[in-house]
Amino acid sequence: MFLLEVFDQTLKKLKSQTANLITLTNLSVGGFAIVFGIHGNLRLSLLLIFVAALADRFDGMAARKFNIESDLGKQLDSMSDIISFGVAPALLLYQGILHEFGGPGSFFTVFYIGCGAFRLARFNITESNGYFTGLPITAAGCLATLSFLAIPYWPSQVFAFIMIILSLLMVAPFKLKKI
Image (cartoon, rainbow, N blue to C red; front, side, top):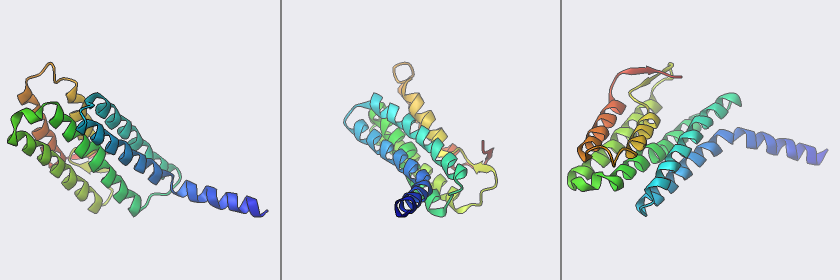
């Protein structure tokens, strides 16, 4: 009896933290993407950003499935997203091509991160009404990361333009229906 109760309580606690554990996986994988990017392993960094996107997709699903959505989970998700879809893709493109621009390349990189942080902060203080305001940082991060694959084929100025456009789209006031 006692072991069954302990097992049941442990299972309930684990279930209640499932979404947060998946969110922390997103954050961890994004952190590794940054570390590998700093050390020049840009292809692995790219792969890890997409793995983080999968984790990001599943954390919300788990929270809804187990009915464990919380303010803590929402904040943790945003903090993870700024790492995995803000800093990691910006650093990937900086290391891959934007460093060639010197100071302006650094500015585009930091501007993208700042707009992503602003977008997440705005999301966290608004009511969930079935719409996103501006481009979600996950989408922006995945598009920035995907653009990395075009470095051998596109002129370097295109990537500065991509970073500016994605930055502005994240903070723009347009609405997108959540799917």
